[in-house]
Image (cartoon, rainbow, N blue to C red; front, side):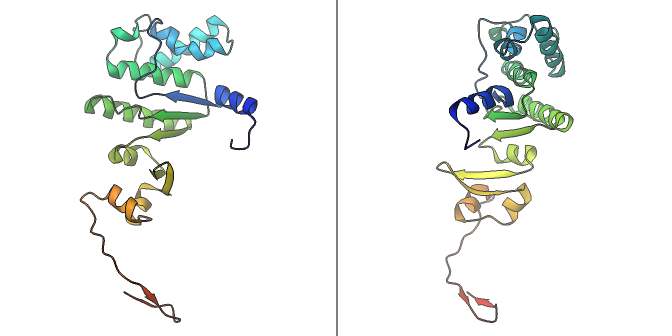
Length: 196
């Protein structure tokens, strides 16, 4: 991806990635079905086929019966389900979710996390889920990347990140309760031993 030309990158984004936003990103003048099928419409998929695909995903995310409603007639959780259905309807291999559940109340958030885990198990999609909620990251992730100022500080399984934080920043970020950090000098010896 980093070596793609602009045109290649545009095609990659259009055909292989889909995005679910924090604030839903729905088109207010379009119904649920029209929001879900928007990407298919842009790609030139025939209307009848597009509708069939859209209805399949609307049903899969639990919104059957709401396909003619408009975003302002839906709860936040329902709007997020529309965004998820829209992303899935494009059959992208990579799903990008930017703080997708942070605006939801805790009960709906937990339901959406469960739905996402079920969908990931079924579809085997790569999901990049951006969150500031460590509990959410632990629940959803196979691998976690801890970032600071746009740079990755550590990548690993949830267990690896908690058991062996890479540095003081990661330790303070994940520490609940806060980890105690001690400053010390480390002296190593030729026989492989060390002393603090």
